[in-house]
Image (tube, rainbow, N blue to C red; front, side, top):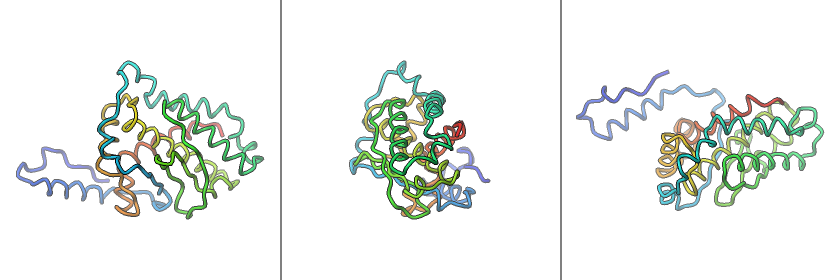
Length: 232
């Protein structure tokens, strides 16, 4: 795998366009998963996002420690592991409607832990390479219906990852548009810049740029960390 060149290796005479080309070439050399099409999700934001991203209200530094990523993961894992419905034998006996109610409860817990508004979780028919999306304008998270209807262990696991992935996007957006609670300064700045300069949808900008943008990297890491600790 190639890495981004150190800043000192770039000639001071290079134009900003040349430096941007260097970054793009690095991005294009990153090795990605073989099932790249199946990773796609979407975020839909209000049109005034660029104005709002830079004007987030901030909580006091001393109030943010409980929002550290590790603490959020720990609290969310504890909540989920105390939900009998997500145990394999119980999940199989739930109706589709009951499963939707369970994922709504999980979103409610994630929102409470992240100190943000809870979004409505729905399911909808989607292409097999789509897993879900978050629409802040409508305050909804949508999950591919086939994941919730399936009884396959891998689909259940993917449904949980998708839900937590989209919940994390809601946390990111809440931070840069409503009130900052994220204690990591660099992470917060990366989210704000990503939103302000424009979310890179895979169907428009290509999978590589979608996959490697800060918002998506963070959401993947967070959801994987939670699901890997679930006793399901």
